Image (cartoon, rainbow, N blue to C red; front, side, top):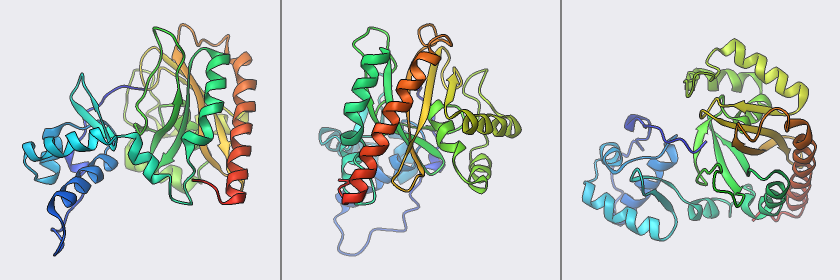
Length: 278
C-alpha cells in the first residue's frame, strides 16, 4: 500500500470525441483530466496526462493547480504525480446510492487505531480495482499511509482479496482476465489457480491476509463489511510493518476487526433504511 507505480497512458485515455457545441473549453479540459485520473490505477504525471488528452503541458499544469487547491486532485510532492482527491470522493458520495464512507467509517477506524496501534483502512471495489475511501492513522513515526482515492489491484492486498472473494465466479474470472495478476513483490500471487485457493480460504475463515504481497515488509489483516442486503460492499483492515503486525497478533486483533466491521455494517444498514447515505 502507498507504493507508486507507472501508468500506461493508453489505459487512462477518455476517448474524447470532441468538444460539444456551446461548451466551456476550460471546463471540458478539467473534466477530461478528472476522467483520466479516475481511469488510472496509479498516480499520474503531467506528461502522461498530456499524452492521454492531447492538452498542452502548461494548460494541464494550470488546471491541476486549481483542482489541487479545491482538493479535487492531490499531488505527491516527492514524485510530482497526481491522483483524485477527497473533494472528488465527497462529491461522488452525494449520490443516494453511494455511502459517505468517511462519515460512516471514521469513528470506527479511530477505535481500531487505538486498539491496534496501526493504520486502519476502509476500502471498496470499483471496477477491477480496490479504492481507499477512509483511513485513520496512529501517532507513530513508522506507519502505513495511502492517499484516499488510491486504486490498487485486488489480488495482492488484504482488502482487495476480501472484496474479490465474495464476487460471483464470473466476475472473478473476468477481473483475472483483465488485470493478468501482475506481480508487485516476490510473494505476490500471480497464478489463477493459487489465487482461487486463497479466495476459497478467505470465504471459509472470514478474513484475508496480505503478507508483503503489495509492498515488501508491509502486512495487512482485512475483514468484510456488509450492506443492508447482506452483500459484501467494503473491507476493513489494519496495516503496518510486518515486524509489528506479525502472525502472533492476528488472533488478538481479529475479534476486534470483526466486531468493528459489524458496527460499520449496522451503521450502513441503518443509513440505507433511512435513505441517508449522504
